[in-house]
Image 1: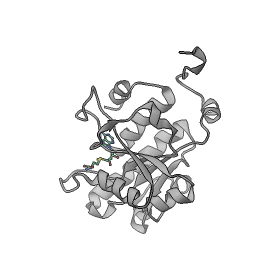
Image 2: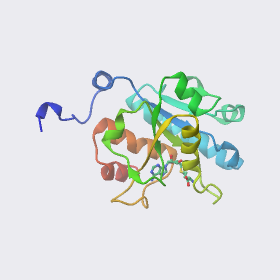
Image 3: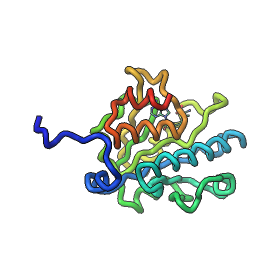
Length: 197
Ligand code: SAM
């Protein structure tokens, strides 16, 4: 392999900007908001704030988009609401407005494992879902179906630890952190997962 092609780990934001054609969006999709209890909604809000904090370490924070963001989310969210991208409508509409027709959906039920070949998409989507009760099983694939029905190509990808989803933290902000460690710092999936366990 030509050495010139080797991806350098640990890039400064400026170097990263010059390498990526455009920064991707990291979308937290609140399609399933109303399936949550009030307490769970509070946890969703907290994990969105923590996601903003992580993203700001690498990007500007604006790349964090929250879709299906209703009034209740806006009221309950205690983070810097004016520094993230809020979209009250469907995720597919947000994507269309931004000329994005293919996405990666982070989905623990996917067949395929996320890899660096997937880092070229315009957006990564994480389900804005918190599981404390057992009523939200298989809700992530539903987000994918919604997007496909609206004409978006969806690459469903899972994050695994030594080949298995067991042992991977499922908090929204940790999933985002794992992607960022792999994408920006060039870490392997196992290393990235260990850092967020
Ligand atoms: N109850 C949901 C289900 O059965 O589909 C899982 C919700 S999980 C708490 C929150 C989000 O984190 C998911 O929607 C997904 O985007 C992401 N996620 C969690 N674990 C993941 C994994 N192992 N691989 C990829 N994405 C994951």
